[in-house]
Length: 370
Length: 207
Ligand SMILES: [Zn+2]
Image (tube, rainbow over all chains, first blue to last red; front, top):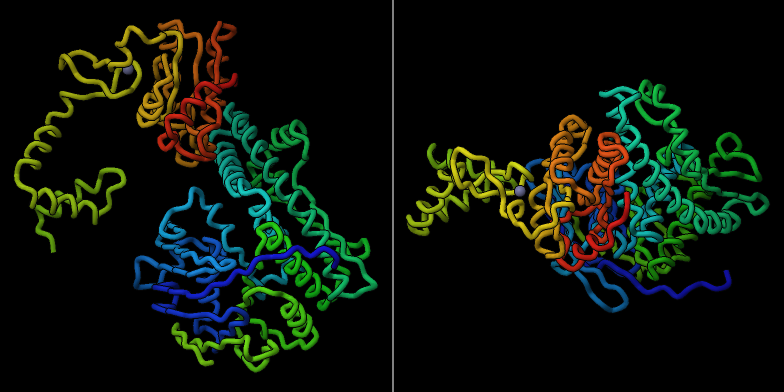
């Protein structure tokens, strides 16, 4: 690597959690480097990571509605973090209840949710992400959207508008038939916002692909080349896209969703020119996922100018020494603050103990043990 | 905890938009503890409301009732200095108020009352298109400024108006314009400051 940009330091100093999933109350002071959360399954380790991710970015990494994050007997959940960025402290807060989410930075509401979402970049690694390489396109679209938010803050609103226009078209098809005149309006809007989403994703895919290719050469097999390209789900020419929507009203009505559009976008992953699904081994899939995540860390970090928080859920779930070693060698190269959950803390090779703080998670309560 | 009468009043207050049960209880306690005058005055005004204020029969704005048996017409519709050839179409009375606050609108208004929104069960037939067309013909309107909010439903409504007015009025001298997107994306006209709103109006473009 030649010109690595200098990134500012970013760390969560303190965290207060109230009525969040199974965590009734937690007040924690974190270390600036490795924070290891250990405990048996179902005790609340992932919930704590989720609380951290939510206060950092306003959203959960699990697909949920705000109300699902609230503890069963509570009405409101809240998470507060004191965040230090190159010496300056700020307080971030998120309050959640059914159907609503409220965020504040230093007691004030930001002008948009997107403003809040990029203040404290966090990248989560979780076991389900193996589908980034092996699964259908949804995880890869979400990856592109997370990056788009940093490169083009309006992309969040564009994606929401696109979804609403498309659902309105579908509803119109179902309730008013394929010749309802207002379908033209909904299709025009689906195309307008769909093209904006596709532009943002194409822009995000470029550095992501470039950095993932480099990362794969380091951690995967040096004699294989990983090539990543944005594969748009609709024609990028406005008139062609409009015509494609108009031509498929009848079948879209029966199918229950539109054939074309960025909701069908993907990233094509090629190993030496061939699609990875089918040719890659388990180990190669994992190397591809780690390459994509490492590229995500880089793109997010460089666009915000800080070291993102790294959150790793259940890192010892697969006792594959080669994979674990690749992951830890990656982590040791990362300069930022890191949070890990594990059922077996003895497997977490963080290097020096001075830079490590341990917490025990049991039945929704957390306790610092070192 | 609350007596049946107190509960009934709380439930009525909680029907107001933006008022939850807790706020409704706060209102009730305030009315109980701040002396009888506030409650009596508010009650009398509310009881008289249907005889004092009504939607303007021409535009949908709030209008003062002059004669109980006649249609109410608002101050803007009666203002002779307004340019009758210029008509601004808004979704709600709030939006009309926000535009008026900017002070640069010299025409009159038409309040749709709703936006095209199939997801909320509102189709084109629920929009007062026939009334709008009648109004345009009656007043010989030359320019329609569509000032629906910059949300997806607001944009769809703007596009639909453009198409429907074109179909109804053919090649008449009517121009349909859209306010510039100076107001926040996906946002609300209500929250736009007067300067932004003024710019959005003067920067309007042909749809
Ligand atoms: Zn009026």
